[in-house]
Image (spheres, rainbow, N blue to C red):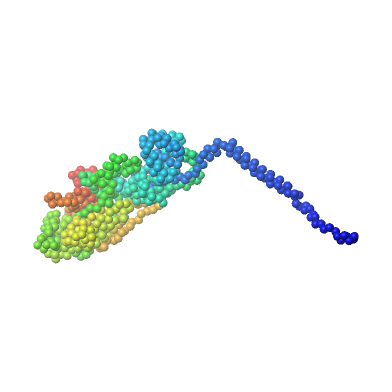
Length: 636
């Protein structure tokens, strides 16, 4: 209140100005406006640079600007023989292809017609292959239209590529087999991956146009030989042409294989076997190291040329292979099974010695046959023949002269003489112990286990009971018994090395492209046969006598002690005169004193003596060089 008594009007107190504030805020706004103008200016300058200064370049890139992942195939590993002689080569093959995603919209037909005019494939077929390729592999993987183009056609397509969006000339590795047909069953071949294989091996990053091992070691060692594909990320233009590599992972090339095969010995075995096989449908031979299981030579006749599968296979070539009665695509050393005939007798002999059925001095008289009472008709007698009336024979003579009667006794016995044989169960037991009736484990696909029969097997398979006659036939390698040539050579090797049943193998080493050894294959023993070494030695000595003064005398080699056993096995239906067609066998090892190699020679529709002569030539070549090849046929 003032002194006059009047009430003073209340007024709010005006704040004092803050000297640190920017007046009314206009300077701050000015700065923000300047910053926005600057940023727009930079953007305008960049747009001018891109559209005016570099307009053409960015216009081209704007048309596509696509990134793609492209697989880089690895180089397939090479294959060598044990002396590092090359058996295969990698070469280049040209193919015409189309990338479906790069075809011009609405202009696909023009590209198809252009390609058809160059490579001679109908437009409809091109369209079909493009559709199939796109369905399997996607729009941006090349669909191969035609493989194996010649150089001139490849050049034409290379010139057309820039003018035909989607058209591609592919240069891919191809396999060449320099050993020709002599190693076709060992090496096998490669071929285009099938739709089934593509699905089955999807985790291994195959492309639809890839090649893959189809048989032989090419198939068995596919993961080692193939390597691991690489990959690159690329920028492509509208036509799918590569502009720039953004990133790249190099492929890991396949490793090289060094085989146990000696290619020069292989070629000699092919030559000799073909000479003695004559007009037979098929034949087989194997030479194996008795201590390591290394297969030095493996031949199956007829052969085929692996090179016919590396390019476009003509219908005529395919028909010639498939229609051949000798089945050239089948490896007869491992996949076909045959009755072994008398080549089985060393196994029966070893079993008889071990089981005490016979000793080295056991004498049996062969009058040329054995008569036994029919099990179902006591009034009837059954005759089981020998190949000759061989008289009194001890164990050595029985095996050396290959007496059927002697081995009828060992296998089935003779009640009239009160001679108790092994019986079918023990014959089967020892046959299996020596590796028959099971796969050997060799590093090849398609091996057959064969058949070792017994009473249970016959009842289940044939539906009839086992008879004494079955045991007699079993004891001489006939009847239901069937084996592969490889099984027989591993069995004989077990006799030669003191009882070790080896796993045969073709791979010796795995090497990289610098020659460094990555892996060495060690000797593997499946089992030790249940026969004492002394008894195996008796069998081996009897086999030696078979060559020196017995039925296998054609296997004799000058200066070399060969132990062996022939076999002539009947098969098929009886002829009108009651005889049968025969397979020929020879099994053996050398040198007898210090065994190194085992050998088997088999000829369909052959005879054991001929096979022994073929084995002699092969063994002489192995131990003495090519001397025997220079001798006249009269010196066999």
